[in-house]
Image (cartoon, rainbow, N blue to C red; front, side, top):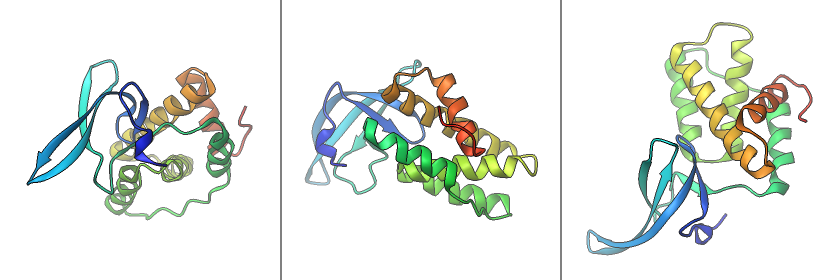
Length: 166
């Protein structure tokens, strides 16, 4: 996905904050180098984030296309998780996946923590990560499919547990 798709007014996804709207694209000189930034607004609380679009790891990406949803749902349903047993190692690994912004990595975090929750009580950090990541993914998929976030969360949960995706 090319970052040229990011322009003022477009919807973007930030793996830690969910779906947002690009307010502006700004050029600034940083350490003598011209740099392009996206200023985006997330959530109802008016959180604004400035992201360097010249960096490899941007933390934001364009919203996925409708035709990518079946692949995402298939990955959620069929990916086999193998999480580390030590909570700090697991948290660090999952946080790395979230920061990648890759939608399939987000699915792996959700699927892995959902599977773990079926065999033991999640730590508060794991539980918060699962809930926030599932909500963020549901917000993006719901936007693309024109489905309410809460309904999309239920669909994601069913897919993680091997059920129907509809």
